[in-house]
Length: 630
Image (cartoon, rainbow, N blue to C red; front, top):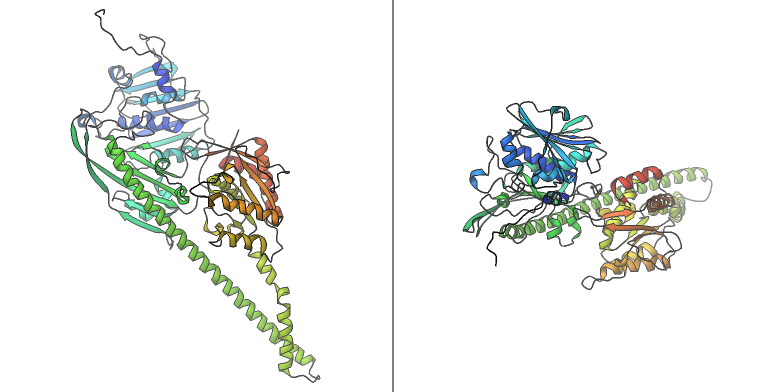
């Protein structure tokens, strides 16, 4: 064999391949650039967003030409691999960056970017393209006529991405809300400014905005316990719990392969929303249902629920932030995914933390069950008190009317051979016979549920969209039956589903219109062996609707073919479910299906005696908040 040296060679195209799918949306890109500013000891970072340009400027240390060439332009050069370089140079912050690939973030949403960095008043400016053709290619330097700076004077760095390849959100609040979820903490000497098409706002951390909507709350450790003061006040159903900070020492190999002890500490908070109605599920946004993991003030995983979930109803209510700095321990292997959106699940730190996170999640689900029970008991008591008050007023009115009639009749019939007791008995008897005509039927009608959403649990995402549309049109929760609904008012009125069906479909004394909105899919007929009753309930409702000839519409999923006895002659709404980036499904509808969806909701409301909003208002709400148009 020839005696020669062999070297691994990396193609210049690797830059393009690395950056292509490194980050999945604009917010993760901005998060990396903001993290770079933090690691540069900036006190302010300015994010400018317009239709033609996205730029990030900071007032950090900036870089000299040597630092730019020797450090920044080295792709994959690890910025911290031991305690000695784990903190920033002047402010001694724990560094957020580590892998040396965050600088490629800007290439994910642009075909190249301008980098301008200033140190001691001396600017250095280059253009970094998304593709390098040759190993010896030299980056093009920019002269001062090719760029302008908005905030930087003597020190700082700017990244300018012209003609971005991502859609720009329509509202500044969308950007603020999503970035606040990635950076949820107040940092005393680090402020994030968002300038959207000329309007600048300071980013306000997300946690306090979330906690005032919670039904249950668990604080873990002391660091986030202050959030208890931001919980809903005077809510007697609110469930709270405090747990000590989790701490467990494990032994694992450090970066040099030497066994060492490392203590895993977890603090933060986890809670559940009162209701899932109004929660954000837009295709270009983060869902409000998440359990995020942070290390060194930086999000490492957006949502761990998709990993630990058990498909329980109340998991869709969960929200929280957990902080685990051991995941970024500098003397130990980097366990974060390349794009900072996941962790190495075989790492001992992950295995240890996941066990505790599952336990905390179980606790908060039980707390929400207690909240739901307390909330239902409170509302039931209010209803009973209202009913008793109405009955007492009716009784008083009847007694007063009877006495008045007795007095009047006694006067008018004074010459007749009748005493007052006989007159009172005759009048009372007549009133008793007339009671059904004095308003009792209207009371029955007023208290009757008028719309039922019939579905299986796996299809709840479509059912939730229907439910939200009904609420948008001011249909009261108490008038809706939705067995897997987020609000207790809509849940089954009896534990026995058969008794419930009989009451709803057969033994109804009301002539009020009843509409059934069926969500059909393969889940209706694909009975789960471990949970056969999940589909059986809807099959029973289909049969009952046919027997009693109840009016209904069909909302159909993924091209399933519903059959009679459902009304398949009328056109049904076709809905397709796509996987979302954060684990939450996306409802995809054609323009025609969007129109049909709105028309059926409006028609249902009209037939049940409600005044729905306009077609355009319904269409705008549906497309903006609940579905995407394909």
